[in-house]
Image 1: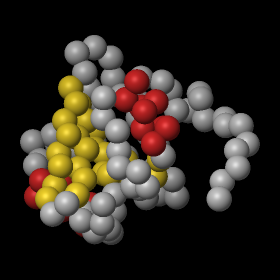
Image 2: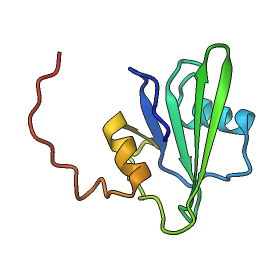
Image 3: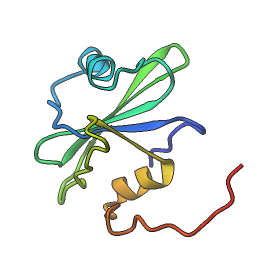
Image 4: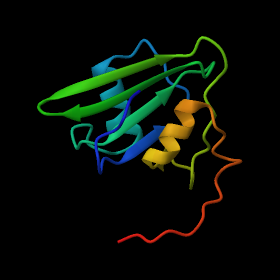
Length: 116
């Protein structure tokens, strides 16, 4: 099971992504669509049109990691952009739910917790 780096920001590209893209192509999307630096340690998530494939790009310790997930059955949830952006920030719990197939829209109500 994939676990993101502690404290890493997690962003989902809400537009359809061509899964033929590798490190350079996905880094270009991060720079152009997200207006962000792909080497800042954040985790960037991309999903294809059929929603059965996901790529996650992260820079760590002097190099890029590219994680690729192919579902044998089912699809990943379509996440909607907020404020017209092509990106949406999620947390590690939402990422775990997305990978497990839990609907974020239906399970989005959270109980109050202390945060420092």
